[in-house]
Length: 428
Ligand code: LLP
Image (cartoon, rainbow, N blue to C red; front, side, top):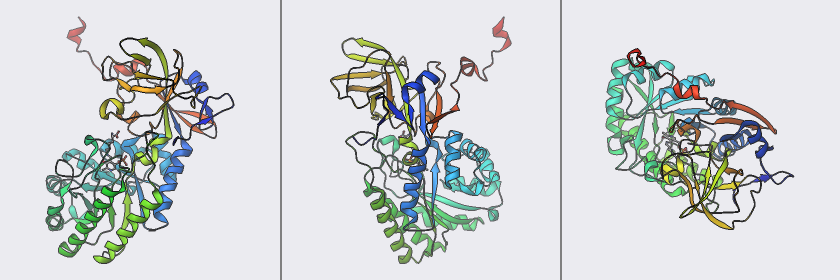
């Protein structure tokens, strides 16, 4: 078993030193539980692996994975920078105390108002299209801004086709063949382009495509340096580092991965005489993915044509299984190490047949009233939740040193009505 499931003296699942069943008694279900130490450990492991091999290294936490302010504060304290993909994320990062110099804004299909907001916030703008470059030049004084470009190196990877962001089908970035032209164009418009970026996809456990993207981006950077005379202050390889969700998957060997990348990076720096730019990575999932558990209660055992365990969460709470067919390991919180003795479907409470967390999942006996723990829900889980079926979103609790603190209140019915307005004619 790859997931280090801790149990306490009662045999119950323990998260950050707290008993999962006691947390449920206190906060009800569904409940997101975040383990602060895991976030800090993940950040430090990744940072140290790269920093020990290339000192000018920075992590830009991809906050789309989890924008809870407490999570953001933890990463601010760790010294992280922020990858923001919307002005809402810039706003949250600023609220969480990040200096704008630590925010890189990589928007996609951005409107002028959003560009204005990003520029005036002081974040660095990473440009995704020629349209965006031209519009940016009209709404600001280019000489005042350092910019970078997102390049599509025509290689992509990811755990699902929706999560592949490089290659010919991808809407992201600027074609590698166009790079020199675009950097020249930026300089002619008066900008100071100082960075280059790529992000080829998400959930990558095989280092090979990532390495290929590193190589291709470095070759593009070399050409841009030679042909457009750009001196790079940073080279950003994006995020995408995967984590195991299934017990049969293995972790990325981060020591080997960091060595391969930094070796190639240094080799290409000297090949193209690129001086010593900073190296950036933009991990989201790797930092927060395994740091949260979703606790949910079984309210129905149903023997229909199939056997179902019905729980009080749905794809409104956690959409990854329904959206990508993603596997999330599930254990029974009062006996997390119990061996399976049946196969069962674990279904949510949303009125859609696609609302399934697992089909034919080997599980031990499950009874009504049991608490199930859905693992590895720190990334793209709460941040992708919704109120669909008019269910208030769950609470989030942070654990550190066995102490639980609420970091997001459970929503109420009032939140379902928030900002709605009934025209007076309809009240007659
Ligand atoms: N940088 C950029 C520009 C990105 O678009 C992303 C993710 C990342 C970094 C971070 O990727 P990560 O290290 O977390 O893989 N909802 C999907 C994942 C979508 C990721 C979108 N972009 C999921 O649940 O798997």
